[in-house]
Amino acid sequence: MANASKLSSGAWRTLAAKTINGKKVRKSFTVHPDECGGDSKKAKTLSERNAREWVLNTETDQIFTTVSTAIDLYIKDRSSVLSPSTIADYKRMPKHFSDLLPLDVNDVDSKTIQATINEMAMNKLNARTIKNRIFFLISALNYVGADKRFKLRFPSQIKPNLAPPEPTEFKRLLEMATDEERLIIILAGLYTLRRGEIAGLCGEDLLWDLNSIYVHTSRVQNDKKEWIRRDMPKNLNSVRVIQIDPEIMQLFPKVGPKEYVISLNPNEITKHFIRLRKKACVDCRFHDLRKYAASIRAEMMPSKYVEKAGGWRKGSTVLSTIYDKPFKEKESEYSKKFNQAIVEEYGKEIFGE
Image (cartoon, rainbow, N blue to C red):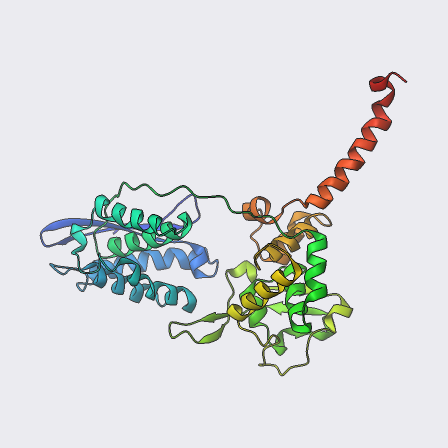
């Protein structure tokens, strides 16, 4: 079996092969460092281990392997390396493929999957959701040795409105929020925290002497739909210390080391925000507040400091393409300054005065 090779994406891939029912089956095992907390060495080791275990594991070598069995085995394999919330999402996947579950994996072809895609599109699911579900299905099929190449057509992705709220809208949210909601809006819209990171903050994370907070956990749901505190946020870059204004620091409640700073879980945060945005007449999602935080910071400091505060990787294209967005109000202000400047500089030549 070959050693893992590094792909241009930074992921590690190991190629493996074995004979199943007299047929040579080849399979690739790809692991991205993000699945291992940003540790590239661990990703390489895991890729090689997964390949080695697949070669030695006869549980996947059944004469007849159903799609349902393939999904169960795939989830079981991933349970030790993925977050509880991701595994919980995976365990909800089978209900989206009810017609396919009893089929032999070898009977699933491009036509079969395309029919599923078409049905999902007819049910008005967005393109991203459809792709996530189908790619999960293909991963499960490949895990048990199907390793097919499917020719599929997905619906066009409708580009969502990625603009953050305007400064005046953000101020309205602050003005109309309750005390706890206001602290949540501040953490997301000024200090870049994700919903799960806000809900995961505990008293031990409030560094009063430094006027800072330590972001290193996230509150997520496990497969039993229980809210738990996970020690590592989305990726290794997400572990960070964020300086807070001393006056704003006083808005944090005094709680015990293991007590949550915010009483709401992530889903409750979203529900509260939906009510608040309607009351404030602001059209944005909660995650757009993080974009607001990135945008205002981008006007005040070099990108490397914005990346550190928000937990983005150095040189991340996500920051520039999604989060750092111009405000319409600021755009108008800068346009007026530009027009005044060019008239002052070139007015004589333009108007002949």
